[in-house]
Length: 68
Length: 257
Image 1 (cartoon, helix red, strand yellow):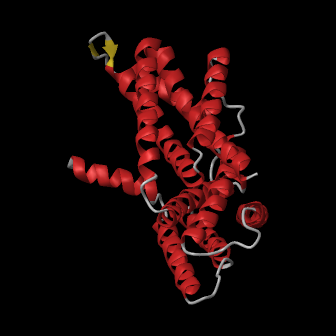
Image 2: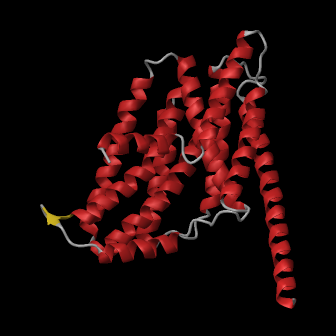
Image 3: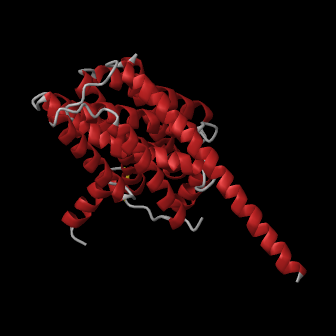
C-alpha cells in the first residue's frame, strides 16, 4: 500500500472514526442551521436535537454491529 | 465558567490519553530499557508541542465565523465518538479499557521482538514509544489548538494538558505500574460530553446562531447532554439485561428438553 493511501487512511480514521454517518449528519445539521438562520429563523435548537438523534442512531448501529 | 470547563476538558482528555501512552512506555522501558523508550516519548512530546505552536497562531488568520464552524464541526465529530464509546462501555456493550491486559500484551510483544541497535538506540523501543505518545497525543494537540484558538486561550488549554502530563507522569514514576485504577471510562464520558457541548456551541455560532443566554448556554447544553447520556446508559443496560435473561431462559429450556 502506498504511503499516500496510508496517510489518507490515517486522517480519515482520525477525523471521521468508525461511523462515517455521524460526520455526515453533523455536516448536514450545521448546513441546515446556517440555512434557517439566513432565512431569519434563529435555529439554536436544531443542533442539540440533531446531536441526540445522531447519537441514538450511532448507538443503535454499534449495538447491531456487535450482535447485541 | 467556560474557561474553567475548557481547562477541565483539556486536562481530562490529556489525562486519559496520557494514561494509555504511559502503559506503552512503561512496558517498553521495563523490557527493552528506559533510555530508548524515554527518548522516543520525549521526541513525540516535542513533535506535539511543535504542532500546537505552529497551528495555534496560524489559525488567527482565519475569520472567526469560519473558524468556529470548522472547529465546532471537528469537536462535534470527535465528541460524539468519545461519547458513543463511553455510553457503550458504561452499559456493558463494549469491554472496558483494561490497562493491565494491554500492559501484559505490550510486554510480551516487546520481549519477542528482535534487537536492532543503531546509534546506541534500540529502534523497536524508540519507534513504539514515539508512535504511542504521538498518536495518543495528536487528538489532545488538536483539542488544545481548537479550544485555544476559538477563545483566544491556548495557554488555558495548554495548562490543562500540561497538568495532566505532570500528574500522570509523576504517578507512573512513583508506582511504576500501569494506572489501571484511573476511572478511564468516567473521564472519557466527561471529555465526550465537553467536546460535544463546545462543538454544538461553536458550530452553531459559526453557522450564524445567537445563543439565548450567551455563554450560559454552554452550561445548559452540558447538563442537557449529561441527562440524555445517562438516560441512554440506563435504557441500554436494561435492554442488555433483558437479552441476557431471555437467552438464559432459552438455554435452560433447551437443557431440560
